[in-house]
Image (cartoon, rainbow, N blue to C red; front, side):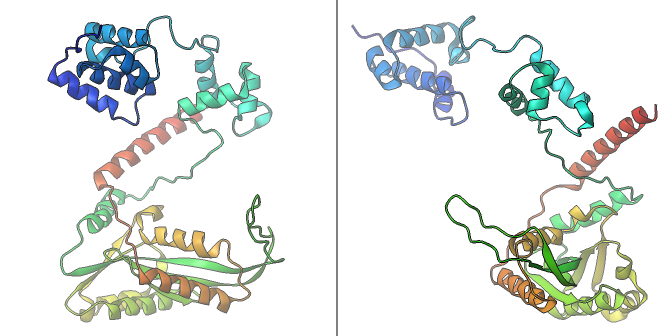
Length: 366
């Protein structure tokens, strides 16, 4: 005999269909949802069991649980069933508390799975699973600096506003200098990558001098203007500003996001900007300790990661040619970095960080 089709409402069918199509929910929940949909279509329990890779008694239990609890019962593990906890009660809480509040023995700066396992009396793999389940990474540290600029909010709103709502009939540039780019050559040739071994390079190097890179990214197109100079004084900044000015057609405004380096306000730069012919120029200064707000810094990271860090340069001229060639290649198919964070979201995070820092300082002082 074949069981009657499983009765369910249109809403329940829609909910089960979403569960059955999910790639994130637990596997047992997805399998049961599919089985119940087949049951609602009148498919026999034996056939459902075959398709699901279970026995027919399991299908009957799923049908019975659905009749009692509806969609909420799909994939639910019955009381007393399932994998039993392998750790003593309170172990997870002890690991989490020790990780966040206690120091490892010997004055170490952070816990490892082995030191924590020895502290709590469990296996290192158990410690690793606890950390993974709760998103803890004691071995990792991120750098930060909260700006103390008294005009932080005002400057932030100005810069982010330019990114999110660029002025009409204007070109917006993100400008900065990457100073002291080093022409480093390795002391021995690198070994090529092969199966089972990454490319190698010596840990020591020969220094052949440095060069300063000026760069301005058009935030609309992603194209980058560059110039290489021996220094970054006011005269060097002025020369690069003139280069930017020449690239922007007449009739369009020029908006430049930059930091508060003293060379950017040198007398020769200020005098040049004050001329009536530069009325189309507008500078947007980022707050102190906020280089992350300058989009061109992201391009500097691309340059460093993909050309400089693993490069070998026998002279400053060799380095200049490499940077110039990489920038030209970038501009053949430029990719703008799209800014998405709003000023309100950033200010909220910064205020939360300031509050936390104040609490830590207060606790430390006492």
